[in-house]
Length: 339
Image (cartoon, rainbow, N blue to C red; front, side, top):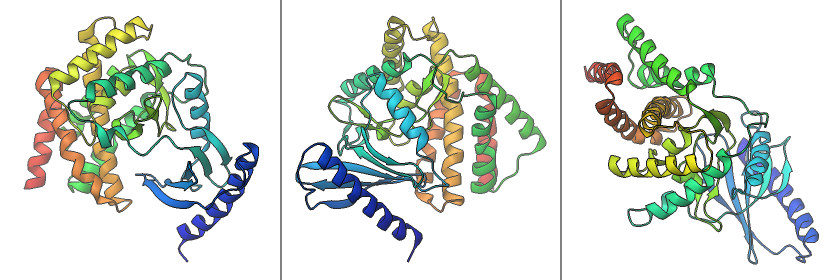
């Protein structure tokens, strides 16, 4: 029997024990007959299931050790909840085996429902939640977005996208160019004021719920650049918005952040430049990650979203002369791959 089926059997036994306890604790009576269905899969090794029965609904996270570790999820869940952010309630946990029984935040992500006529309202709610956790004091034992982490991320691009997806090796001149570009992006990120950073704050990880939004997938949170999450929100893997609209949302966030005492750059142009460069660092990382998920993990579907990230980079390069060298390098690599 495949390993994951054995794991699902273990999870099912554990789940029924936890539901028995939960129903007793809340005096809900006997545990009803329920159904266990796949709720979603992840680019990682995590899986999610939904249990439903007699009007009750819960989500179960299956995070198999040693590939996954539930502890950061639990710690950051409590941290965000302390700021009034709507995150799943943790009803039961088995950290050794990687099982969590969670409250259900609903069936619809922002990605499922967002469109031109409701985006302003949904993003306004997302900004409110973002400001709530950016106001938290930075005293939890979280890692920092330091030079080493930023560099490790950006190096995914030459290693996995250029090397594995395009099958190219950088020339000496291209390596020197890449080093200059990387340093510019890393220096810009490190120069920014720091806050709590979710690291994947995008419509796919926000649920339409009451209160809105429900926030998911926060287990990789760090302390890092103030522009990171807001840039992520509008420059998503699955949705693109007109640049003028993005600039309007960014300005709205920037004004609210200033009023809330979040340490954003005091001049909007400086904030927007930092956001642009932060976005480019992330886009290069994501292109590398999607290539790695394809070539290492055998999940090629993510590569279909790579052109969107190159489009984001092209748009920023067209407005930022200091990134002309990146535009040139990408053009050379794409020509090399065609040849």
